[in-house]
Length: 114
Length: 114
Image (cartoon, rainbow over all chains, first blue to last red; front, side, top):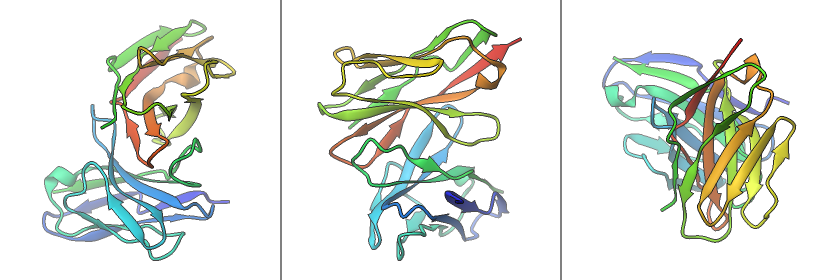
């Protein structure tokens, strides 16, 4: 049972390039989310989804797009990378949103924008 | 809006001693969940303990326990008999039952010294 799988683990981009961070879960979870982790700021929510076909913005959505065409996958797209997007990105999933079930996290993607 | 504050960026403790990490939060709702996550150098996010706001009894998980003070909006984590493997960043997090969002504090870096 793989849990939450994120790819790639590391990536270096040039300013202006685009890329997609992949996230897949095999637990049939309805709720999925993306966070970015920056020193001294904890994890901040970028976008989230409560089920296939439904997405919504989190705390820091600017510069990122998401889609949820299947229950399993929730990719995060950077349209035009900027140095301010240098961060560690985590994908997480849980059985549903409004419950006490904890979120399961992927291992993170370290992204550097030059 | 829900907020979570961890006022101790760094803490250290001697092996086998007890340490308490502080967390305060703010929410306008009466029903919510609180979590402590651990992030070791491997970068994984690991659930340590959770607390439902409607439960008066403090949660415990082996060497980990919480002091939940609902009126004061305080949720501290106590680690007893600290072990070297407890060295990690610890995050406090809040989720309101009416929504899906998980809000994290800034984190506390705990170092256990031999």
